[in-house]
Length: 185
Image (cartoon, rainbow, N blue to C red; front, side, top):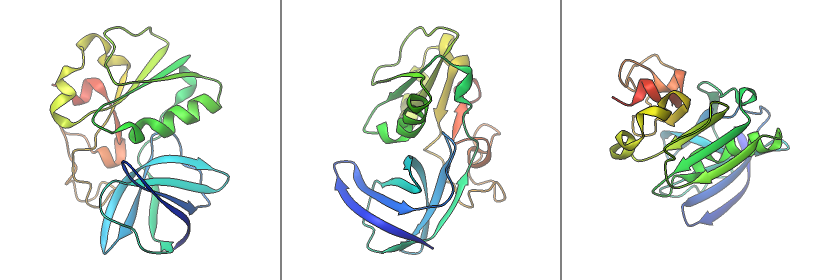
């Protein structure tokens, strides 16, 4: 159990700040137990031993949190000179932590709500879109894109149950940011 330091209502949900001893890698996620349900959450930020999470729906009325993680595969940001986050439909929090982490490493970052039609080879796109919009990503940028697979149900979050399987991949282990070429048909 981890101590909840603060709860702040926001337009896109509730921002929880939780004392947490393990710094997650950019692109990883955690699960939090809320009212008996295990909810996978992207990490919003991590500062000085404090994990920042956004719960989009419902409420969180506890002072302690049961958290499993960090889970999933981190993103190696060191290979790129620029990281561009693309988010639509209020999903900016999905790409926030990788962008902030890259910025802290001295990598140039941008956040857009429109998918670019061209990106240089030294640039990585991290994308969070509603499921119905992923096929709007131009094919020529898929090889330099990581897509947040948020529309699958992550039941166990460790790859045992297979419920999250999407196109033969397990986003709970190989993601939640997956290579664009694997995700878009």
